[in-house]
Amino acid sequence: MSRQMVRPGGRSARVQASVHAAVRELASEVGRDALTVPMIAQRAGVTPSTVYRRWGDLQELLSDVAVERLRPETAPGDHGTLSSDLTVWAEQFLDEMSSPAGLAYVRDALLGDPDGGNAGQCSAYAAEQIGVVLGRAAERGEETPGVETVVDHVVAPLMYRILFRPDGLDTAYARRLVAAVLGPAGGSGPAGGSGPAHAGRDGAA
Image 1 (cartoon, rainbow, N blue to C red):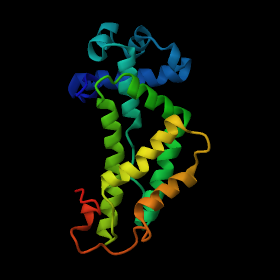
Image 2 (image 1 turned 45 degrees about the vertical axis):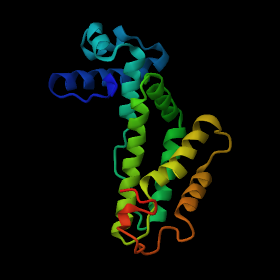
Image 3 (image 1 turned 45 degrees about the horizontal axis):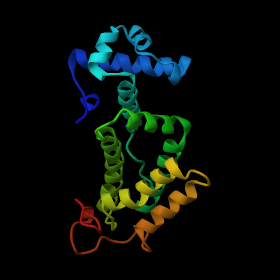
Image 4 (image 1 turned 180 degrees about the vertical axis):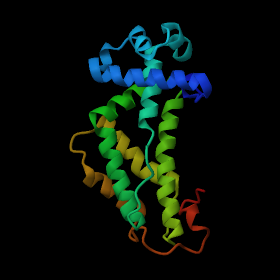
């Protein structure tokens, strides 16, 4: 696990909160590219050495802030069916990640992430949200794919298009991905008899 992914408590948590707030405020005021460690430290009320000791350099700090900003603030909405829930979630995911702010956060999260820990954390955010949607559908008696199946067939192609082929990317593409992963039943049929509904078609727990 990379250094910036540790979530401390006590004074260390207060330092993290104040430094993160300083980064967000200053980025809004002067722009991300103008940020420096001394500037951030002064706004946060800490010494530059505290920032360097905790994060190593400016890019690792920006990466840590980005990962925190990419953390979903609310649970996925409940719209009554798996198809509706997953479609709305995918559309929102696309909208947020393809926005200028979302792209900047993704860039910062990955640039300060030599060991891949931040990428894994961002992936875990998406998987957790998908798990909520699928678990809710299973409780309604709907057949569900597994979390990893949705990640592979919805999240992965969305992120590829966002990062490498954004031209023409729209919510219709997200809807097609969801429709394809749910299949003809659209996630609305009863759970099959081969196992618990929450296990999904690919057997993921």
